[in-house]
Length: 151
Image (cartoon, rainbow, N blue to C red; front, side, top):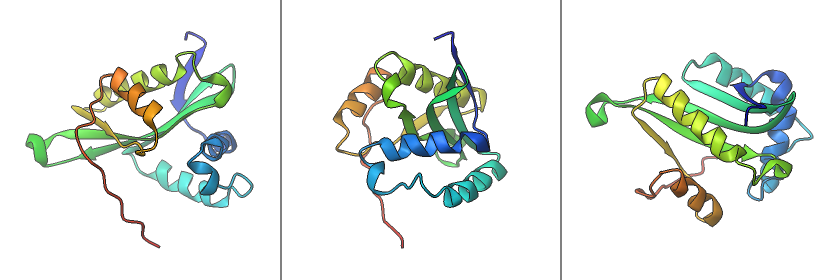
């Protein structure tokens, strides 16, 4: 994976990021790569928050993977700082070669660098392959997540 660079996303990366989100089976019905306006506004909000890290995996100048790392400073667990990993995506033609593992290893290393002592993520119940992937990386399915959709 020496041809891979992990870096903060730039505004120019948005089309590739949104394309990966939309290409996903869950994102196909909720993402719209034809209108980047809401994503540009969201990118600006993320960029203004020092605790948000939108990361891309770059291979030869092309965005081939992405995730968002959020830092949460908390009171519980004796004041533990944790990170939450969200929106992990690897471009379809890049899957199966270790890129996802490298991306997650980068997220864990970055979490350590940011002072976190816990990394957590959620994954939709329907994503059995993703669950096996995260377990292989050492994550445990220790909690049940709940969501409340606000309109």
